[in-house]
Every structure is written in structure tokens, then in C-alpha cells.
Length: 478
Ligand SMILES: [Zn+2]
Image 1 (spheres, protein in one colour):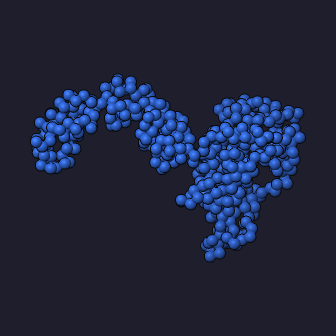
Image 2: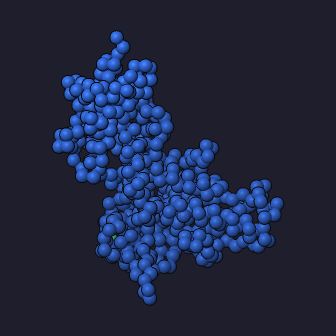
Image 3: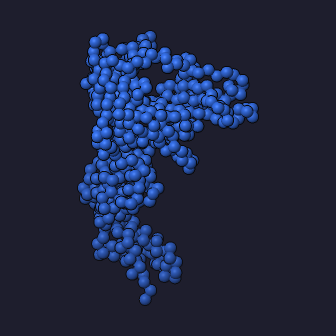
């Protein structure tokens, strides 16, 4: 790499497509679902039959505006939909209804943090459009499923504020978290709920304009975005260094080979021949409507984290771990009961361990939060010691059931009966004369050994503080 190319700076912008989780499609009453057989959730409107008329789903507007409010955007009081000419079998109307020059939301942004450095990534706009059908290419044939056609789709466009793959990854992670908190999308990447186009170019830091950009289309994992960007930036820097002239083009990410490949040179905006859709009225929003939606805004992660610290007395770090996933934070709150610190510990150790081992989301976790709360209450009451509590938790994970019943059925209740513990303590003292002498002559650690022996005799069920007290009493020097 020559000295002049070594300091080329990448400039990155992201266009993120987010499927809204409305019950029905954007222009018709067909259901939005991904589990139905192909072409069963369709009607003349979403199949693009001539003469069919679209009617805007107001809930899609509300969810887009909620997203705009969460991202600090300005909400347009008047916006409109436009037709974008587009010929491809996945769009039978031969145009896509989108928003061209009057989107619903403008401005706003997201704060990200990479390696301890905070940066604000500005958002240019959010517009509301329709998703297209899904083509499947089989051997020797292609099929199209129109169930997805007409699913409300938000496109969230950043300013070119990102400068490396780590920032892009952090931005997408933060965006997903906000969308989840807002409840506007299911955010399931495997289902294609979030797809992303990347614009990337490189230029000298003092250049007065950006370099020639490549667009990498249709990324459906954040990991993929990270890898594709790392590759593409290296490729462009190398090309510039070798004196090649880059062309503005659309590229495709080949995940298996780990490379981007040229697909086509980029169309300019006028090729799409945008014009206002004559079948749709302008969207008009009143201040009163927007104010009402503001009152429905959910608590965002940063606010919730601060509340977990003040309301439950959790360390800031723990609160941050819990709110990073809305489902996990909800689970914690439902389990918190009278001992939120213990609940936080259980969630951050046992629950998160199982989630990562089983590669599972909290939504599918087999132990309901109230059952974990009940288990914690049993420990607090002294019915269970912490070792036995883990045993009960393992049973709840495997077989379900409520903790009281499991403790009863398996006889796991802690022995807090002084008489029973005293008998174990006496036996242990009798059987371990040498260790007792060691302790009496000042070897403190001998006590731990004796305590272990008593716990063993009780099969782990003795109340540990009581055992310790009794041992100390019995061995007290006269
Ligand atoms: Zn339909």
C-alpha cells in the first residue's frame, strides 16, 4: 500500500429496511404472516391487478411515526406516496409505492459507542413503502410468493456518518434495540424483518468530495454487514492504490467466499421516474395526533437502565446488561419480587448461561419469570439453600413445574431444625478428633472442613449459617 492510499478514509451510509409488525398489509386487508403456504395471503390489490385501489393502513403510519419519535426525527405534517417504476417479477404492478421527496420523518439520529468512544450517527429520513414478493430459484425453474408483497416497510436512511465496520455494526445493534423497545417490528433477522443496503466509498481525509460509491444490496445479517464492509473497504483502497478508476455500481455480498461482486452499474434516480401516486391521498397528521402518540412512547433503554439503578438498587453495569435486551429486562422485572438483586444475579448468571448454551431467545426460555421469583422467595425464607436452589432450577428447566412442589416431591427442603443439625455436628466432631484439635490449636481453616462434613451428612440440606454457629458453639474454648 502506498503512503497516499494508507490514509484513505471510508465513508459509509446505511439504508435499513424494517418490516413493520402490523396485522395487515399496507394497502389491503391481507394478513402479514411468514408461516403461510405461498400465495395464500393475497388479493387483487397486493397482486397488482389493474383497477384495484390501495387504501393506506393507518397503523403502518403510526408505527413509522413512533419510530421517528424514538429516533428524535421531525415528523412531517404532510407527506405523500410516489410510484417508483421498477420492472421485476416480484413486483407485479411494475412500480413500487414508496415516498420520494416528502417522507414521513426527517432528521434525528442514534448515539453509538465503539471502544468507549461515543458518536452520534445522524438519520437523514424515514419513509414508508411496500415490501415486494419473494422469488425462489429452484433447479431449472423460479417461483414467486406474493405473501410478502405489500408488507409495510420502513426505510431508515443514515447520513454518511459511519467510518468503519465496527460503527456500522454498533449502529445496527442500537437501531434494532430501539425498534424492539418501540414494538414496531419483530426484528427477526432470519425472517428478513431487517434488511440493509450499504453505501461505501473511500477518499483522502482532505478531499472536498466523497469517493465513487459502491452499493452493497440486501444484507440480512449484522455479521454479514461487518464482514462485507471490511472486505469492500480493503478492495477499494487497493484499487485506488493500483491507479484503477472505480465505477459507481451495485455489488452483491458472497457470504461463502467472503467477497463482494459487481452486479450492475448504478441507475440514477431519474431512471425510476418517480411521480406522485394518483390513487393515494396525501398523509396529513395533526399536532394533536402526534402529541397523543408521544404519550404512548415506551421507556427507552437508557431511561430504563437509570430506573433499574434507582428503583432496584442494581449496579449500573448490571442494569446495562439487563436492558440491552428488552425481553431480558421484562423477564427480570417480572421475577424481581422482593429481592431484585437476587433476581438480577439469577438472570445474569443461570438464565443467560442457558440462553447462550442453547442459542435461545428469552421469549423461548422454559422457566416463566414468576416461577423464578418463587424460587428466589424460597431461598429468602430459608426453605432452600443456594446449592439446592440450583438443583431445583435445573429441574424447572428440564421438566417445568413450580418450585414449592419440586422441593416437596424431592425432599430438598433445607434442614433448619436445631436438633437434627446438632446430631450431625456431634457425629462429625466425634469422627474427626484430629481436625478438631487442629482447630482448637488455632487452625481456622479446619472449621471449613468440619462444616463440609456436616453438609455432606445432611446431603447438602442443612442450613449453612446454623451449622457454622453450632460448630463454633460446641468447639468454643472454655
Ligand atoms: Zn392483499
